[in-house]
Amino acid sequence: MAAPFMEKLAEYLGSPEPAVRLILSVLLGYPFALVYRWFFFHQSATVVHLFHTFSGLALATFNFGSRVCHSFLCIVIQFLLLRLMGRTVTCVLSSFIFQMIYLLMGYYYTATEEYDIKWTMPHCVLALKLIGLALDYYDGGKEQSQLSADQKKSALNSTPSLLEVFGFSYFYGGFLVGPQFTLQNYQHLVSREMSDVPGQPPNSVVPAMKRFGLGLITLSVFAIGGPHYSDSYYLTDEFEAHPFWYKCVYMLVWVKINLYKYISCWLITEGVCILSGLGYNGKNEKGEHQWDACANVRLWLFETTPLFTGTINSFNINTNAWVARQVFKRLRFLGNKLLSQMFTLLFLAVWHGLHSGYLICFSLEFIIVNVERQAETLVRDSPLLTSIAQSHLYPFVYVVQQLIHWLFMGYPLVPFCLFTYDKWLKVLSYSSAS
Image (cartoon, rainbow, N blue to C red; front, side, top):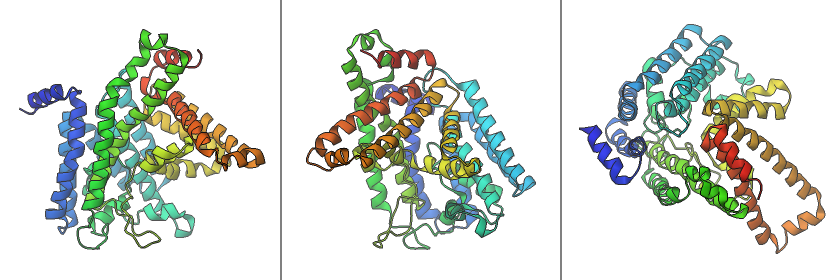
């Protein structure tokens, strides 16, 4: 019964059925969070783990059917690695190699030349979560003096149970599209500590609804603008025939609208995390409760920054924080920050998939970020440029910065979205000259 209904709903909405299933699943996080608050908040840890496990499994099965076995298998094997190998470098390396090879094999056997929603989409989120679990478990065996401030917040002092790892992995607010969070944060949720009223359901309905509302707005922008600024239009003879200025304008608008696809999902799932309590982040300097522990986008910064680095810092925050903590900072032994950055971006490219477009995207990101930093240094060191930036001409400078910034955001995103070299190379070649 469900399949014909979903087919008709997808046809009515004019969207692919997998996309409709995904959006519905993300929205279902809200009733799941309410059920947790009303019926399971004061239950034992075992009952809470079971609820999170089976609710997440239900969403996974709804979207991917029997292919949910892939996530189930990887979770079980990760648990066995922790138990059998303990807090060792061998466990960390085995976890990293197994989870990444399994993910990459999934990409190899399922990838097409289009963006498809299939089991590998949530599995890339899960892979980071399980690799991070092994690293946090390893850190838990170190002396406190050997840990950084970030590592102290996530290090695991005890061995988790299989049920706990299942609940952590399948949590309905993070399994499908993220965000990343640590097992220690999940443990605090289960022990009723993630609340502005410890031991009681958090007063988080209003902040959750605010993120939900913003998510619906950005989803609407993408739903309305997406069909007019599609990836496929880049490959048409009509686009190729347009003058260079038109291609630049199209790319400027396209990149902004295209990113709303991701932002809308992250905002909606952030609302789910806030509603459940996982989004609680203590108090700020003013004593106000914060609900941004699971924020994956800083929307105001995303909309207003004129800098490429500003957009990076506002976008996919939790994944970037995970990579910074678990990859970039652990490459300190290389003794070269630039080299560490290169390997980190290489890891991100491979983690996203096997298409050449991902490698080009993150290579361009590396180049643009470093050129931008040099440009900022040049402005700071030049009295003339500094005076212009601080004068009444700044609004004009800001507009020019924004145009350049979003244009250079578009160039890396083209290969990211078009995947294969025959497509992105064609587009970039005739979008780089008149």
